[in-house]
Length: 152
Image 1 (cartoon, one colour):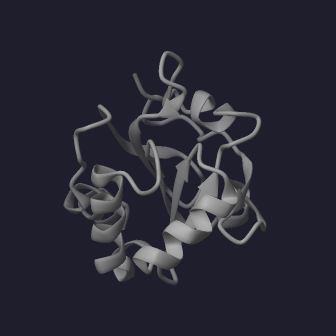
Image 2 (cartoon, one colour):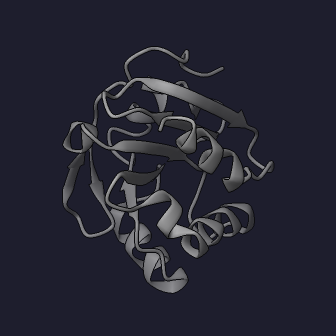
């Protein structure tokens, strides 16, 4: 299940890997990719994050912001970012546990973590594209890049 295309994305404020508060509304006027993932340091998540790292200019630039959200604690995200060379915003949905993931219909109650949901938002915060994959199903960053290009 996913939030419907054409709806305003729920605003949120979470702490990033440096412990700083980041709000979705901070990015109004830019395109935003909101990417949920289960856990730092797991094989599929690491592969997805490294694919983003290797193409960061496509997803985090003057016109676009990438935020990746998991239920990991900020300290874990900091070590994950340092270990893998990740430079974009890694946001912690640790406490209240999964609150933002739930708002985006991306939280698995039976397992206690976010699934692989991705939303592409336009400059007004409207959802224009989304995909939801299961925990072991990696997403293709080409799909996000195409969705972003379609917003121009």
